[in-house]
Image (cartoon, rainbow, N blue to C red; front, side, top):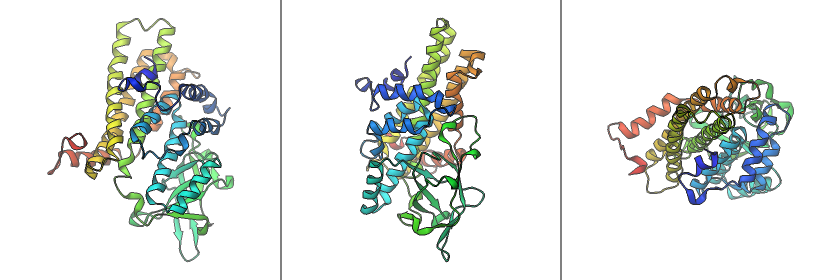
Amino acid sequence: MAASTCLAALSPSDADGPVPSNISDALRAAAKAEERGERPIARSMELLRQAGLLTDDGSSDPFRTARALMQVGAANLSVGRLWEGHVNALNLIRIHGSEAQKARVACRIADGALLGVWGADGAVPVTLETAAHLLKGTKCFASGLGTVTDALVTVNAGSEVRLALIDVTDASRADPSTWDMHGMRPTASGSYDFTDLPADRASWIGEPGDYLKEPHFVGGVWRIAALQAGAAAGLLDRAATELRATGRMGADAQKTRLMSVLMRIWAAIALTERAAKAANDPHIAQDDIVATSISARLFTEEVGLDAIRAVEQSIGLWHFEAGSETGRIARDLSVYLRQAARDAFLQRAAQTALGEDGRIWGAFG
């Protein structure tokens, strides 16, 4: 039950996928040292750069991007989280940025830049003080402190929210100590203080309200779903490897428990790939694109929780040992699964599919 088999089962002709196997192996091997703080995650991001993945904005071939995110998520979810932020930022700049801004960003990436999208406000939201021409406020859960060089930052709120591309390499403004989660530790998703930063240090991308436009906002959560599906597959793969090594995979109960989850992972992969392809399909209604993307995001969350529970039951107490690889993967996945506004997402998708003018077939019609 290798992770490559889990992820390639729906496309046997593309078994190796868009991420070379040597890159996936290297990302997987680095994960433990990155969690312990013994290796900077920037080295793994450099592997993605060498593979040509940091120029991908997910628009030319969303199916391939989804498959690549699954492969990286299976190998190293923290790396996947940073890469997904980079892809998201590139996509937003492609959609809303000027040609000059796109050219500058391309040059920055060629010179080694890594992008991110920082949208979660701290106790004081990030706003623009127009009279003083200064920013104020902080971002929390800002992934990639010390690794992300340029962040797309949401400024102001509601219909006035704007995207500002800002150099975030000033370590004195970053506080990685605020990221005290039990998983995804290598992402260093702490806080960053923009207070008194001159507004002319920001490159404004698009117009007020552009960031929230669909189908690129919620309609893009298929990328998160891809990472979740990949990580669930990677967790099952690692568990199966350990069970075989200890002679415990022979029991029918083990195979039944894990296979039941694996079938759901394959279904989650198929739904996520459908959502990715729908995102760029001009023949699919915007609401259906969004509902399909939401459905993939929520279904892969449920499947991820199923995978964690099944692996805990199959591995037993050794799963919770400090050096357990299945334990590390499960810690990362359990943190990553917990995105905000789950109930609101579900209701939004339900209204599209089941409301008064509902379309049950949606993007599948």
